[in-house]
Amino acid sequence: MIVSASYRTDIPAFFAPWFTERWAAGYALVPNPYNRKLTRVGLTPEENDGMVFWTRWIAPFFDCLDRVFGDGVPFVVQYTATGLGPEIEPGVPDWRRAVETMHRVADRYGAGRVVWRFDPIVIREGEDWEDSALRFATIAEAVKGAADEAVVSFTQFYAKTRRALDRLAATGGSRIVDPDDETKRRLLGALSEIAHRLDLRLSLCGQPDLILPGIHEAACVDAERLSRVAGYAVAAKNKPHRATCRCAQSRDIGTFATCKFGCRYCYAA
Image (cartoon, rainbow, N blue to C red; front, side, top):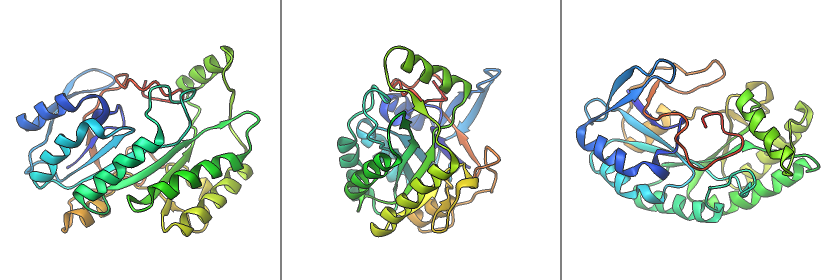
């Protein structure tokens, strides 16, 4: 089984000591988010076919990555860097520092380990879509050599997300808008051109209706990528956790409402 750590919270940024303890024990007990029932997820090399780490700040986690790497378990880092700033992502380190650590991961553990997430795309009222394209281009130039794929998606206005964004606007902050599909496709076309120029594969996560030629449907828990970094075929079933997702089957070991970054758009807070 592939282990996801974690799309529910940022384990690398905030829970390195916990992960170190659980890795040594060889398992984690994970509460079901609905009924709180605990499930055992194996973390030994015999039970764990590969790991996907999700983060906005990997710096506290290098000792953990050393352990995973040393034990021969293949891993990939899904690394978010958007450059949205403290109004939208209050606790997130500056994207330049994040990109520096992306390069450290690639240099230390080899090519193919890092996937850059420019995700979600957040557009403020009065802002042109070209502003997002410019921000993407600036970060993409810095990411080149550390990552070979960029994953994007547009803000999903879940009820919790909408309430948080409405509070931001009500207290004098920016109003976040949901552009029409034509505007989204114009932006995606521009991002595709930038990515192609920089030899980045551009993937769109969970929004297949917006796919354009040259843009791929994302598989964020990607058995093929894990197989490439491992040098052998990683066992996996094609069993995504939502209908619009191309991820391989995985078990997530995180817990909702434990991330401390405070991103305004977060569905897991």
